[in-house]
Image 1 (cartoon, rainbow, N blue to C red):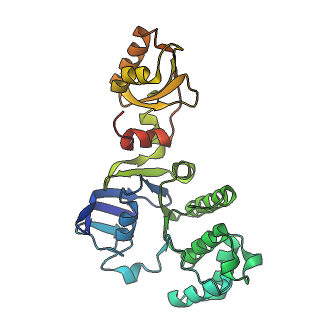
Image 2: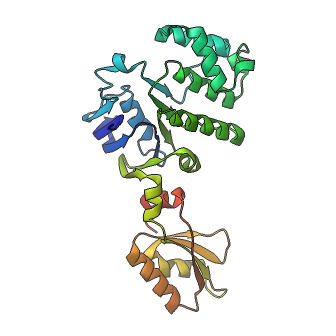
Image 3: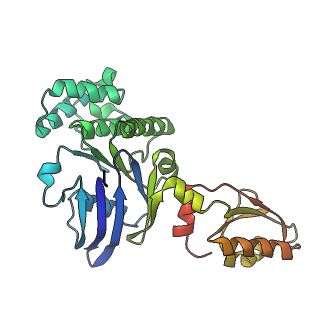
Length: 307
């Protein structure tokens, strides 16, 4: 089976400014896909184009083989989404909120379906409490339940755990993984790299209106394996001196210990140059140790800028 989400060459200009500059990405059935990037990279605009809320100036989008801008009505019950605003009514209970949307969606046997989604998010005992009294985390879970009412094949989530305490973050991530294991495709738009690394099998990193890299998370990490180092700085040397000697070989960052710096090399040439610089500058450097890489390191290489 091919990609359920396919975005090719999307461009969008808003208020005279280029927001999207040729976005390409795709997500396969049953995977959790994360679109990550710094603020202003174009993530939310990309999501709105994918949902048919914005029309692209160029390029194409297909969701489940259909164009959301021309065939939105045919996609309505096959996709679910949660944007920044949760779309809940504070004076209505969770049960009443879900019943309202179930009627809009035309869901048959809506009582049974409401009970199912409330059970999935663990809110059966609070189904009749006014939604306005719920915590932010509970409201976010209820918004996800609303998006799941129609039993969608694809779920789009914009910053699903933003502003939520760690307990609810963990719970929501577990719910999303459960959905993916059922065969749902989950598309997450986030700047939370820990969240992306925790639940996503595939990642696209966005910067300045385009996806600068996309791939399986394991492959992105493997590509940088052996490229991250902690370099010790001698007592008589300054961090500025150390950075100047190492900057040509990779991305230099402060280490949690003041007598060391972290370095992410961009390629094998950088690794060789770094090791040679440490070896030939014994008065500046005391040691060099390899470290495992994570998504933060991949992000820094593509979005961190020049050292």
